[in-house]
Length: 294
Image (cartoon, rainbow, N blue to C red; front, side, top):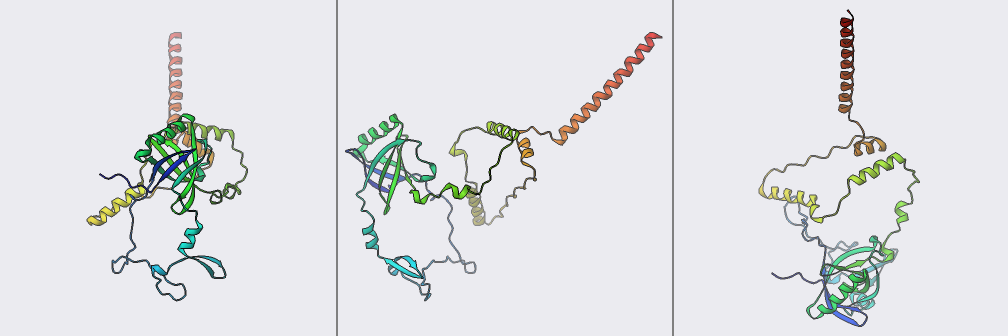
């Protein structure tokens, strides 16, 4: 069975040490169900074409070129050789710029993960770097041109190899203030905080990726299978919306501290029974005293 195909091959450089490496995609969407666009009337697949926005004529692939809008509907045309000349030529070297603490980079900068593995003649140098980083508890920042674009890469030890995660540039990450600027300053009541802490404590656990299923993909697969076999597909019942309630009551219900109506009735019935029993015992005791006195 053939091994996975490398997405990129080059050399990893740290100091004056070089070792040949390959990058392999660590996360892929190729297993997801994909759809084609079909003409409902004919059942034929629809073909996508690029058309001229003014003439409406189809533009063939060789006549398509990249352009940047300079304003007022005017475009600057960029030929492929001009773009290639402007982008730094890749020397196929993933050069390590610095070693940093493993948790120094904020997760919002993470883009796409790759497995980084050695090619045969570079295994010793690769293992030296991997074990040295693991011993020092550090990650590495490196840079190279990947897929026609200069990229910054975070390299970390992972099992027998390394992972290389491409990083977003600073200008690509939106400021958190844009998302949180409209939030009001809210003071949380102590009871609410205690209840929330209790709920969090009861839900503590670990992460096992194998226990999380893509239910959407599974449902699509079942639907496609039913369609192919000509069988009726049972629709899943939509979840019922929860009844509106205030936050404190919802927390009490979640924490199990609120009494259910049935429990209240049971408790009330028990109290009534005890009261009746007490009255009965009292009456019996009084009758016995009278008989003894008589």
